[in-house]
Amino acid sequence: MNNVNYKSIKGKVKAEPEEKKGYVRDFITGQWLKSNPEEGPRQIMLKRLVEEYGYDKNDIEIEVKIKKGSQLIGPADIVIFQKNKPHNQDYIEIIVECKKPERRDGITQLKTYMAPTKSVKYGVWFNGKDIVYLRATDKEPVETFGVPKFGETLGLPRKADLRPFTELSKRFEVIHNYIYANEGLRNDETFDEILRLLFMKIQDEKDNRSSFVLFGVSGEEFDLIRDGKENKTDFRERIEKLFEETKERFKDIFRRGESISLKTYTLAWVVGQLQDFSLLNSKIDVKGAAFQKFVYHHQRGDRGEFFTPDPIIDLVVKFLDPSPEQKVIDPACGTGRFLTETMRYVWDKYFEYIPVGPRKWEAKLDYALNNLRGIDFNPTVAKIAKMRMVLMDDGHTGIFSANSLEEWNILGQVARESEVKGGVKPNSFDLVMTNPPFGSKGRVQEKRVLEQFDLARKWQKQENGKWQKTNTMQNAQVPDILFIERCLDFLKEGGKMAILLPDGDLTNSTLAFARQFVKEKARILAVVSLPKETFIPHGAGVKASILFLQKLSERNLEKLQKQDYPVFFGIIEKIGYEGDKTGLPTYKRDENGEIVKDKTGEPILDEDVSEVIAAWQNFKKKNL
Picture (cartoon, rainbow, N blue to C red):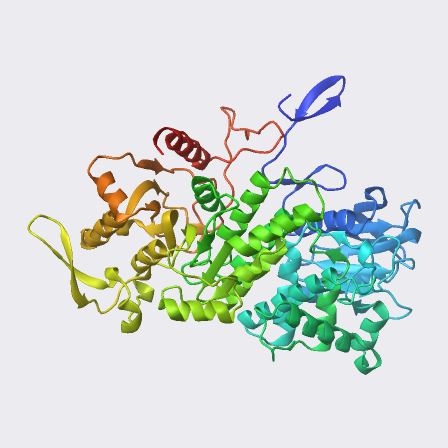
C-alpha cells in the first residue's frame, strides 16, 4: 500500500499525505498544524517530554486556555496534566511556552500562565535556541536547571535510570548559547568548555564506583548555588575532582594544568541539561548527527575545510572496502568522519558474527585502537575527532595533532609523545583516505618542509614532452599537491588511497608535472567527479574530484605502463541535497510530485552516488 496512512472518512478510505507543504504534523495528536517559527520548538519539546522524560501523551495537550479571574488567557503552547487526572486547571503540572521568541517576553508570558494555576510545579520557555526553566514557589517562580522526569524529582539520578537521548542537536545548541551568553567567552573557548563537559560525562558513565551520577546537581544544590551559597554544597568540588579523573583517563586529550573556567552557576545549569541521560547508551546515529551539526556550526574553517559531506564519506569507504587487518590513516582527519565511518563499516561487515558480549566488544575495540590513525594540524579539531571516536565507542588514541607534512622524524616524535601505539611511519598503511586543505590561501613556504617533496621542486618540460624534476625549490606550494606525495609515502606497496582534490589539480596545464608524478608512482584506479554544489552547504564553492590510487613497486608499474589499463571514471550529478547554504535533503518524486519511499517507508534521496558505487563494484569485479 505504498506505506501511506489510511483514514476512514464517511465510509471511504482516504490516503493521508506523509508531508504537507507549509504544515507540520503534531507529535501528540497527529494533526497537521501550520508551520511557523514557534511550531518547530514546540514539536521538539513534545518529543523530548514524551521520549526522554517519560510523560504520557494522554496527559499532554496543546493550545490550552488558562483561566485568570473571570478571563481566559493564552493559549499555553503545551500543558502537562497530572497522571490520569481530568484535563482542567486544577491538575496542571507543567506549562511550556514557545510562542514568544524573545527571552524577556517569553518568561513574562510563562509567569502569567503559572500565576493563576495553583497546581503547577514547573514552567519552561523554549525558542529553539535558548531555554529557561522555572520552579513554582509560594511567591514568584524561580529559575532552575530543568524539569524532572515523570514520577521523579530534581535530584542526582541513579546511573541505572539514565535514558538515551532522542534529540541532541538542539540540546547542544542551547548549552553553547547559554555558556556564550553568560560567561563572556569567545566562541572557541565556549566550544572547549563543552568538550570538557562531554568527556566528563562519559568518564562518569564509565566509572562504576557509585550507583548515582557524580556529573550532576540536585534541586537543593542548585537553589543554594543560585542564591550565592555554593560553599554549602560539594557540587564544585565533586565536578572538579571528576575532571581530574577525566584528565587522567584521557591524558592524550587534556593538558595537565587544564581547568574548568565556568562560573559555578553556569556549570550547574549545564550539568543539569545532561545528567539524566546517557551518552554511551544513546544511538550512534543520534550522537553522530548531533555532534556533526554542532561542530559544523561552531568550528568550521573559512572554507569548510574540516567537513566532508556524508555521501562522499560513504562513497570513499565503500570504494576502498576496508577490512579488519588493514591499517587506515587520514593525515588531514578534521573531525574524524572518514575514521568513524571506516570503523562502523568494518564493525558491521566483519564483527556481526561474534555473539554479543565482552568478546565482541574487545574485538571491535582492538580493531579501532590498533588500525585507525588520524592527524590534524588544528589541536582543537583533533580533540573533536577524538570525541567523535569516543561517542562511537572508542578508538580515539590513534588520533593526534601535528602537521602531516612535517619531516618524518618530527612527525614520529609527536606521535610517540601523544602515546599513539606504533607511531606513524612511511610505507606502513594499507589505506589512506583524506580531504586535505586546498587552495592558494594556505601555501606551504617553510623551506625545511618543502625540501622533503619532489612536488615542491621546479620541473622542466623536455623535448619528448615529459617533465624532468630539477634541483631548484619552488618558493611555495599548495598543500593539496604536497598531500598527494605524502599520502603515497604513507602507503605500503599495494596500498590504496583516496584523496579529494580541486579539479584544477587534474586539469591545469601548469600542474602537468604533478600528474606525471602520480602516473610514475601509482596505478590510477578511479576518478570520481563531484558536482559543484558538493561543498556549498559547508562554506566552499570549489569544484572537486576524488582520485583513487594504488601504490605499486617500480617493476610492477613499468610492466603496467607498457599497456593500456582500465581506469574507472564516475560522474556524480546529484548529491542528495540542495546546492545552497541550507543543504536540505532532496528526494525523488513520482510523476505526481509525491516523494518516493522505500520498502520501510523512508523517503528516497534524489542522488546518484549509490549508482556510482554500484558501477565501481561491478568494474572492480571485472578489472581488478
